[in-house]
Length: 271
Image (cartoon, rainbow, N blue to C red; front, side):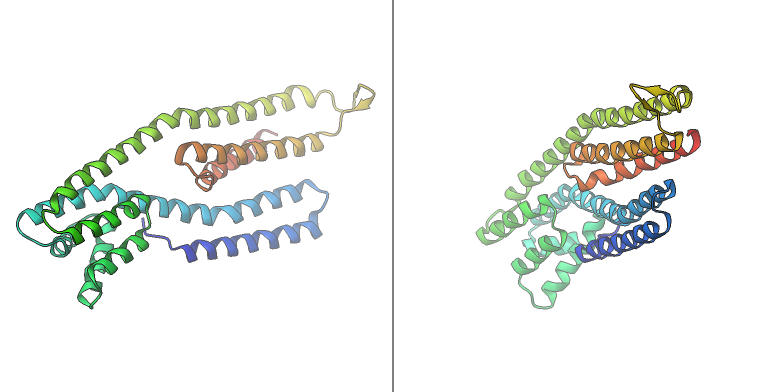
């Protein structure tokens, strides 16, 4: 997965939201008051959310791959320094190996050093480009180790173990939250099944009958109401799943899109 820059994400949000707003305005002047208007709004929401969600997921996979290769990088630095290399030489030697997406960033850092940038400046630029939590924590430690001198490998060995432990704890946390995410999906599909069952077996048969002094609305109105309920349930359920699973609401947009599409297809087929 390639790295997605912030300006690309912002551009995707601006373009997709603009297209969605244009679609809603068109639907408002063309299909206002009809059930077709709801479908136009639904697809406008998909257009607004899909590109940023895909880009955010690609960037998340890139950052995850960078963090997973950090322990290997530190082990290589320790091995290189044990042979007598300095820290900049060890990082330059490490850039010749394969560390996934981290390799390109290391090569860029060594190129900056060769152009005259100091080691600390190049390392700070590396941390700013990668900008993961683990990288932001390790860059100051590497700089302090470089300043202190001596047997720097004694710093990198426990640092690599610390990062490995952090990654294992994060993986364990994700494994523990998966059942709760599954519960959100199950609850949504149970809700969807209940809506379809109620409509097919109950509301269709009582259309027009007086209940508590009023009449049951038409099946078209019931379909629209159930459609609204399904989309709202799917959207907010997905956000909760993202917050529980990955710690951010933005990460839940992919769950929202999946459940919204499933709900739309199910209602379209069965209602």
